[in-house]
Amino acid sequence: MRKILTLEDYLEGFKKLDRTILSRAITLVESQNQEHQVLAQELLQTLLPKTGTSKRIGISGTPGVGKSTFIESFGKMLTSQNKTLAVLAVDPTSQVSGGSILGDKTRMNELAIDPLAYIRPSPSGETLGGVARRTRESMLLCEAFGFDYILVETVGVGQSETTVAQMVDLFVMLLQPGAGDDLQGIKRGILEMVDMVVVTKDDGENHQIIQKAKHDYERALHILRHEGWIPPVVSCSALTKSGLPEIQTIIESYFINQKSLIKNKRDQQGLNWMWQLIHDGLKEKFLSQVSSAELKKTEALVLSQNLTAPQAAKKLLNNY
Image (tube, rainbow, N blue to C red; front, side, top):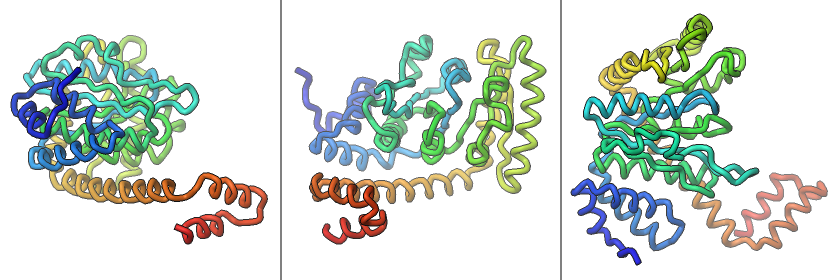
């Protein structure tokens, strides 16, 4: 049986840069157990002064765009420069299949065994809200542990892009023209939230198509973003490694020259997170007090059109 760790055990483990303790700390914040949550919040509060120094980067893109290959190649380039990185996954369990897509270390064989890298699979069995909450807290733990970079990977479908964009400093979208990522197929809202576009698989016969798409994306982003940071568009091949040094140069420049923008982002993200937790907490408290019978009865009244949705909500809220 594993030893039950105290707050002091966790703090000592972080001082010693013990990866096992980091993994157990992340498991602690992922736990639904009330006692674990109390200890997790104590740990986060104690470590908070040590957070905020890592570069938080979100990586998104539709399945098949080459996220795993890109993250492994980019990550190996960073570790070759003696930089450390953590890779976290935001991948809510499918409501249909019950399975996850991301967070499998076998997709990044070399990075998984690199002593300067740390890969944390997505917690299973969670909704998007649950995964986002755990990922934010895991990110703080990784920052306190001292990683130079934290890459937050998302599957790139549904609301996951928005969720990740709201927890990172730089949101990178990987696109692959000819595979459904042509300009007319990309939602305007996605282009409005990205900080950088990387066009993948720029090798072999793809080169001309990639370059045309790159110019199309650049024009669209200049139209959408009239001031401040104009998201650069870079093409790369994670297989040949072309474009990766340029991507790193742009990222480093962003963190040096956009300090005010990054601070404003983090401030707003912190407030948004607080209000999201208040919203989630109130909903949880409400659902714990209302009976399932009353909920079903009220739902039936809405379905039979005897009550409007606003009337039903007001009725339930007034009772609690």
